Image 1 (cartoon, rainbow, N blue to C red):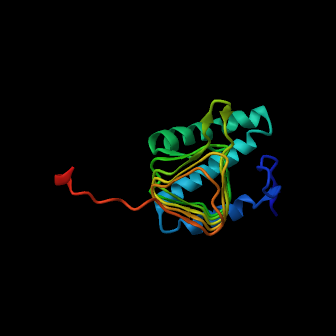
Image 2: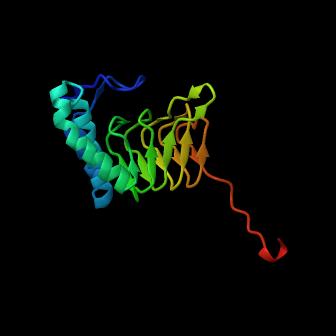
Image 3: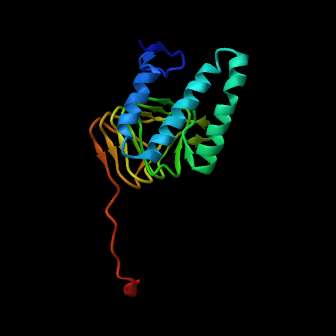
Amino acid sequence: MPKPRPDVAPGLPAVTPGIREVLSADFAANRHDPKGLMLVMAFRLAAEAGWLGRLSPAIRLAMLPILVTYRVLVAWVLGFELPSGTTVGPGLRVRHGQGVVVNPGTVLGSNIMLRQGVTIGNIKRRRGLTPCPVVGDGVEFGANAIVLGEVSIGAGAMIGAGCVVTTDVPAGALVRPPRPEIVDRAKT
């Protein structure tokens, strides 16, 4: 039976799948990639520890070693910054996870694919920070894709390698960068 999660972002159901179902979906999504599986399982463990730590100061203290270990090993050593408080649906896939940075206010749907160098977060403006992106189910991010600001990425969209997205993307859309221009170096 799914458990209620009071920390779920607005617009998402008030209930998320139980941890068993989430881990099963994550395992299936990463079964042929041990490194991706390790990163996702470490995130899920830290996320549960962080959620349990909100129940009482004693539990928070007991969960602290898990959260510190996750932060040091995964974020600092491996360069995979997916904060434990981020809302992430089941079936998260990670390929070549170095250099991934996701702001904790971001909402990621189910069956998301993150590749190396992906950045998802807010924008600092004169009047403050913008809200973070909300990403629908089944979205794939190419290497070094960047999504910033109060944007919505529709279900099934694909953000191509090297794209910078600062506007909403409809469901099923493909975002790709301009084609590179080949220039004769002798003429420049």
